[in-house]
Image 1 (spheres, rainbow, N blue to C red):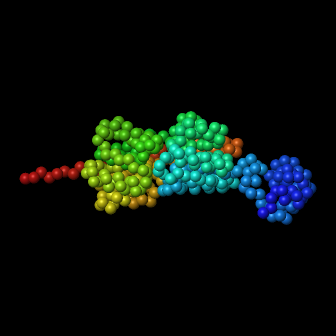
Image 2: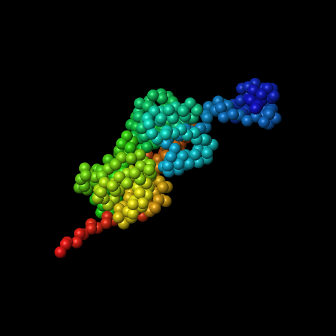
Image 3: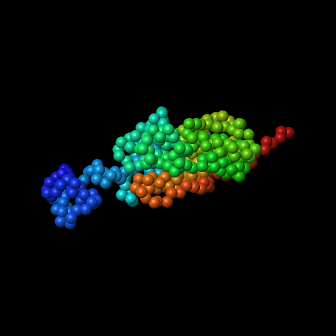
Length: 344
């Protein structure tokens, strides 16, 4: 494979001159340009990615870190990022954790991997990285943005959703349908965004006069398998409930599956409410009512801010993201209490 040195030698020019022609930067006379381009064509020279990065100062690669490559949450996000980058002549490099074990160590190693690959910037979807972890990167942390992370020291590099508001809206939605006997399947206790949404949910119930101390609450792992197992545990407990709130859609889909298997009709017997409003919510059976978090808008804002930092752009960067509820078939009014017939 021909190199830039071969091009310079064949054209009879210095290496610096050949490099200026290839990069398009710097003054070169038309006659010299013609000789260099003729040499490039004769040698079928194609600058390597490393060479282009060396010449331009940019790798034109953006790194993305996600905690796990699984499920329906991250797939559309990665697709959106990739489409946006390709439209601008950029490419995506992905690093991801395995979803179990030391999440912080996995995130730090993933960020280091992307930096070592020469990414111009990184967008991290990890909610476990703290101020000190980003600070430890020194100057390398300047071109990193974090999404769904309440890290306080990052300022404009952090893009966060008001999950407490989302949780409160979930509770208000169930209360509006007359539900007061409610069960909860939460996500991992060490996931800050899960803690916030469940906290907002419980506080809204307390405000409505419901004793949350008596609620059935189980912690799971954001997976359909976890939701299925918790729903089975819920039914086995004999806890009386008319509605189930799940802290993400995938657990809600798993719960719906077990309810169908157990002969529980949704929403006739119980209602189910999810969170995130991912594609799985739209195509579950029945279709899942879910708290809509505008993840595309949040990620797009973070990506725009990152590209502005990396390439001196002026893309619009939104900072407010409206939260709503997408109503579908899994939510209905609380069933009327069964009246026992008095014996003669």
